[in-house]
Length: 221
Image 1 (cartoon, rainbow, N blue to C red):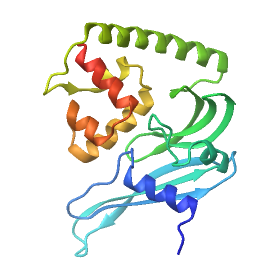
Image 2 (cartoon, helix red, strand yellow; image 1 turned 90 degrees about the horizontal axis):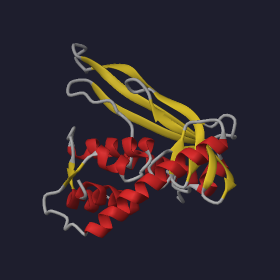
Image 3 (tube, one colour; image 1 turned 90 degrees about the vertical axis):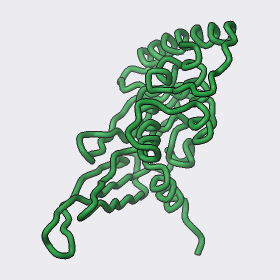
Image 4 (tube, helix red, strand yellow; image 1 turned 180 degrees about the vertical axis):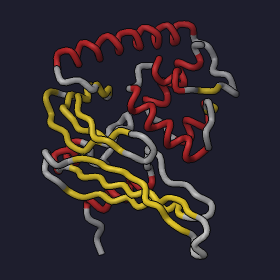
């Protein structure tokens, strides 16, 4: 049977889940992730934990339940459900080329997932209501990041074989803080709670302009 678009998005979420999940050795530890269509007003994301017991009734733990509701216009602009920087985009209205008013999913306490609104401008998410202020904030940040990258290119430092890349390197390179944290959550799921990751392993995990930026910023330290 043919997989529908919303099923594809759900599968993509399951495979690349960027939020905390339930973990347990004795009871629970299962995670249930669903994606559904919704209109723009009702597009949202929720997450919570449910108590679970072992078969013998002695040990208890938690399962995680996560529900995502996407508007069709969000998927029109972001077909995988993810923005290039890693944000899960629940709703999106295009304002200008590479500028969108969006709702995205954001990690809350524990397994909670919240829905926040803001602007996604040139791959950078700003949780703010005023588009002009958002544009100015992104422009300043991108200008500083571009200055650092130009400096790095001019120095032409060779990338050390065992260069480690951290969250601060990603932020300094101009990557969005929210997208960086969600990408870091994916890395923690794959490699554990590490403080940094070797550049070659990072590139092998995901090779795109965002990881390349972070590696370049790390090499300029």
